[in-house]
Image (cartoon, rainbow, N blue to C red; front, top):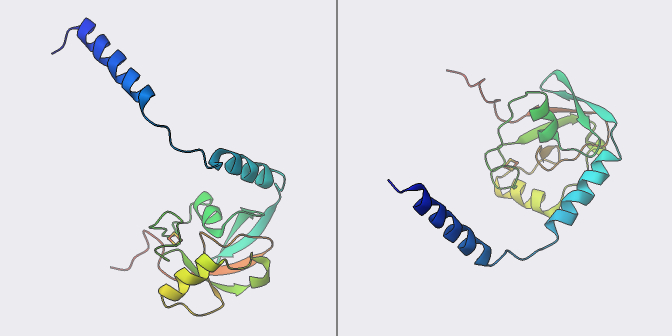
Length: 146
Ligand code: FES
């Protein structure tokens, strides 16, 4: 066990070496995040969504996945909304026109996972602009059959 004076010296040395480490390049992430927050905050109105037969609400401009998680709907999202896993896939039965158009990345992910239906969307990417009715393609977490 180190004496307190030794530990203090180690802490000072570590802090000094951390300060000397190269900083990651600023790619404007902070500004883009702040702009996104301002954009969402400027549209605080909620949009009704029917998710697997339950009524939930989403912020206009927010994603289906965000709305599901906020309402404690346990939709799978293994890759953390990076368009890699497609476990957040939902089938849109009504109001598809109220979702933001599919991005090339979302389209690529769905094709990679052999989902070719225009009614299938990634909940982590689909942004809501109006009422929509969706159903998850995979069972919700905690609802797996035995
Ligand atoms: S959470 Fe993985 S693709 Fe949506």
